[in-house]
Amino acid sequence: MNENRSRADGYVTAGSEYTRDTNYIATRITRDGRDGYPVEPGRYRLVAARACPWANRAMIVRRLLGLEDVISLALCGPTHDSRSWTFDLDPGGVDPGLGYQRVQQAYFARFPDYDRGITVPAIVDIPSKAVVTNDYKQITLDFSIEWADFHRPGAPDLYPEALRPEMEDVMELVYNDVNNGVYRCGFAGSQESYQSSYDRLFARLDWLSERLRDQRYLMGDVITEADVRLFTTLARFDAVYHNHFKCNRHKLSDMPVLWAYARDLFQTPGFGDTIDFVEIKRHYYVVHSDLNPTQIVPKGPDLSGWMTPHGRESLGGRPFGDGTPPGSAPGTEAVAEGHGVLTAA
Image (cartoon, rainbow, N blue to C red; front, side, top):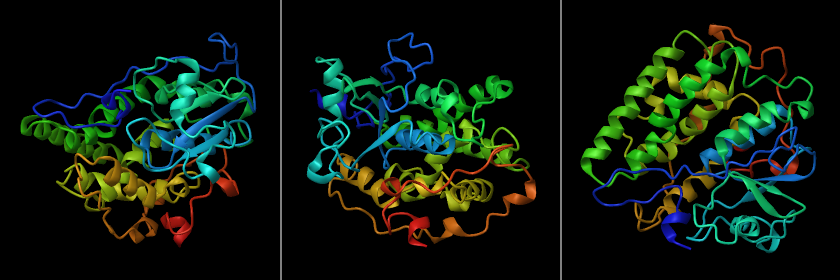
């Protein structure tokens, strides 16, 4: 397989601007099964990696909605080679639900000549062991809409119908300038493209700070999908993006509104308890050998600040709306002791 295809998270091409491959498998799992994959508890396996911000979104939404017993979880390790992510965290390096060593095998089970990025998150059909979709944006929205009959009692409405038009606009801006913006900085192939991406990133972070100054969450008083999408980038900002991707105008911890907002979410069940800082740093500093040829993983930064008081309660709001927080993560899905601030506390 072409290495550039499998390195879907990014690679540097001298003289050019970084462009993400966004041609994902668009198949959907729906109530009516119109794409051949109906909603069916126990049939599908979410393949994710704690290191990946796009996969982390799916893990958070699955947890907030209480879909753990409906859609099983396979976790890849933080590093991978040019072929694909691997199940090296499991005994023998084999995922017990699929019998695979590599995510690539699920893609090839459906598309033998698949030549694009072998990405996570992906949802795999357990009976056929074949990938259904890797469209990470649609995966989480379908968790909210198509899987609604299987949400836990008290699950929040992460995609409120009345807010969707504005939410889509906000999420698109966040994606272009922040979620993907940090990658556009990190994998810029020229000074000009780097500086343009850097300016867009911090202009958008300033805009977000103003939006969040007087309201607790991006869409107002309750947590939505928009907050999940922003959070996974903010959680990685100081640990990785500030140095590794040269996003160094300020650390997150130097931006008071965003830092308080991020800590508020981090301390909310379902968010910070999915974050594994050890795996996050290993992924970026080891896999991106073009940016870090020595593959040395930094010892810092100090993460204790994530658990300090944030004061966002003063803005009011109800994190879960009329619902309730999720319970603790299932034992097999808990972040390893010492890998995350919450588990180390």
